[in-house]
Image (cartoon, rainbow, N blue to C red; front, top):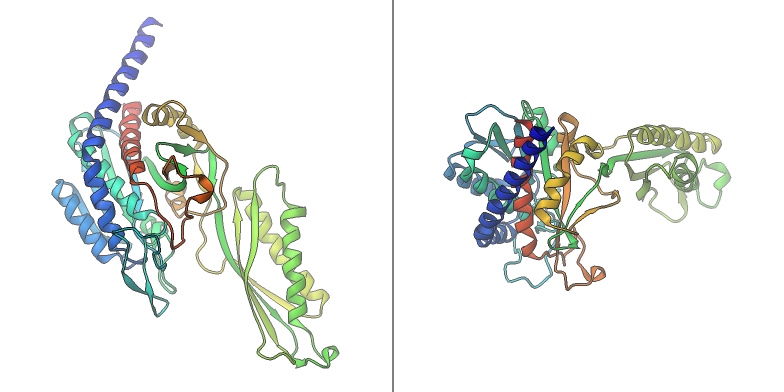
Length: 427
């Protein structure tokens, strides 16, 4: 028993010493991480169009002496640090793409970039923090490469394109990376997302589902056209659609066990008709479903079909349900056993009182495709200045979005320490 306790004590001392070493290196590297982030911020590129971003990352990783593969899932970059010693394969992921948003925040390095989205010229901005994610992973790659002699196994650095969704008619993102074999041989995957409304120096986690599954859908309601003055001659798809919209809301409120997990069903657009005095032949409803539990997800899907078709039938109309309508993402699910094992790493890295377990959010992340292949953790890192009130923090995906760059140092340390500690646990 004494021998076992002594071994544990030595491991704890060793981990603390390594964490101090990582912190010192992250501090020294912080100005460079900020420089990388600002470069990416000034030169954002849209999903599946991250050509210059990929070249910049590729050149840097090659300079570290890593094995680098480019053109993965169109524009992704994957690099491998091989220690030459037996051990697990740890994957670390950062997303690369910007958004069709015009930046309006007064930053001296704000984006002036223009891209093409759905055939139109649009402004482009890193309005979700992917620029920081890339910079943090580059920092972790540098430190882990310098600490190669202390590692056992391999580290796979995954720079993923198209997290925000591939252009219409294209495949992309994490799902395509998985299809191309990026996760083959990987034992575990870690990813971070910076948060504009969470204090710098804070890390947030959750056991199980932390971000929702997303399923877009389309309902086509078919009726019979008639003059608006004689509605009895029609089968009115507009009135039928109105009842379907209201009926869909009762699925969540009356059919799902909401004390178990949250769920959302939203109708985002309605299209039908072209004149005030013509009842059209059909109306189209397009929306999104968000769930945090696989069984609830299945039940909600079945209910949408049943509710839409039943209401349409009661109105003498027809309803065609297309679900999913476009790309679906699974639940971003933190393996509970892995979460328990790595919690000490979070506490040791962030410090006392800086680690918070949070409720799940109904936003979605295609990091979930990696987690379907191997156990993984997805964490939030604070990017809000501590003196800025939370209600004043600019939201993600908005023109005003901005983060405090001081938050990136913790991200670099977390990616590094999660890798080191996981490898040590597997030895």
